[in-house]
Image (cartoon, rainbow, N blue to C red; front, side, top):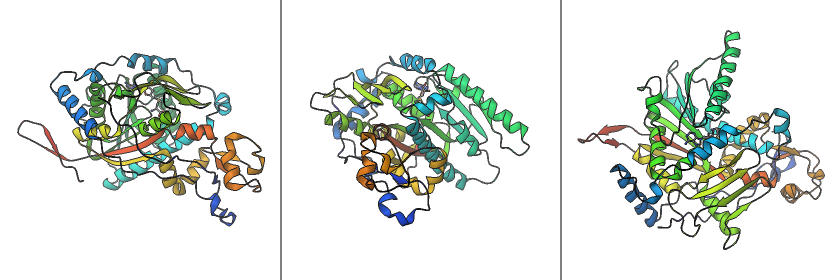
Amino acid sequence: MSVNYEKNVMDEEFAPVKLSDDEESEGNANTEPNVTTAATKPPAATQNSSDNYDAEATAADDGDGGSHSSGGAANTHVVAHHYNELKEAGRKERHKSKIYFMRNFNNWIKSQLINEFMAFIKQQQRVGDALRVLDMCCGKGGDLLKWDKAQISHLICTDIAEVSVEQCQRRYQDILQRAERSKYAHKFTAEFFACDSTMVRLRERYKDASLQLNLVSCQFAFHYCFESLMQADCMMRNAAECLQPGGYFIATIPDAYEIIRRLKAAGPNARRFGNDVYSIEFECDTESLPLFGAKYQFHMEGVVDCPEFLVHFPTLVKLGRRHGLQLVRRSTFAEYFRETMSQGRQLLQRMSGLESVQPHRCGSDDQFEHVRRVLGTQRSRPVGTLSKSEWEATTLYLVCAFKKCKNSWDAKGKPLFEFDD
Ligand SMILES: C[S@@+](CC[C@H](N)C(=O)[O-])C[C@H]1O[C@@H](n2cnc3c(N)ncnc32)[C@H](O)[C@@H]1O
């Protein structure tokens, strides 16, 4: 059965933004990015896709793997191998990369998301309450400083790639050593282990299996579980089961609607699209895409080259509800940037999330054609922007967040969740 991954969104375009707050006199054409906001509510699942998911989910509950697409995890070792082998570029090399600013921009998006939901959690807490976080698919620990800044008390880091987990642990030790030298610095405890979050029940690997988490974060990784229903269900359970009511699960994932829109735009029989920094090539029948296992090869300049899977968003929402998670945010990166830019401007600047460009020096560079179009070539002060290729790559993604609901139990011991929508 084919699933509908299409959504009627307008093409999103990126325009330059001013780099500091003291430029009001330059007119508002420079202050607002010229992006079109798509609906923030996820579209309802088509009848077909809902039925398909329910049938497969029931099969999985019954211990049967479900239909063909719910089956095995043939690609996880490929993904683990890819990330284990990935060499981290030095600072100099990173600076020279074509996606240097986009990586910083993506990092800023993660910071904004973490800060947004940490603030909600802290509102519910009293001073001195523990703040426990699971960083699922933590990679090499790119978010460790964010957790440090958020003043958490305990962190669990796990990833399928052992090499990454070791590096993450070393980075944590460095942070701890620095904090120990300073009398007042914030310190947090942490635990690390390598495992496949789509196959293993994480709770059984925690030092304290009864531990209650306030936040679960899965950045640029949840889509790997959409290889099969069994894996997606396992990963969602891992995200949900130790969260205390009122806690949040936050994630950044590729936007399947946007991917399919670009695929269609590439031509009637196209299987591949992209630009000079990323490419996506489908390996499955694109006329009849399955709910799980809709596989494509993803390549991103120097950082990713492995199989990924489309995440059918209505199915993700349904899976979440099965585990007591209610969707509270879904925004494309373009929407999220636009929404949070005004209060995140300084951080974006500190993180070098945009490239500083002189409009009158853009010349005929295609990558900055949008700067000329919006500002003309007269403006001499620099503006912040991303190259066209980087903007196309970052707008493949969306942020989403789910809130853990309270629950009671029925006579058979199944949880009854109290959703408030
Ligand atoms: C793009 S990286 C993101 C790393 C980190 N979250 C970040 O934002 O910097 C994706 C990560 O997901 C991990 N991953 C992929 N499949 C996984 C699985 N089945 N279980 C656990 N980790 C997985 C990879 O090893 C990799 O570290």
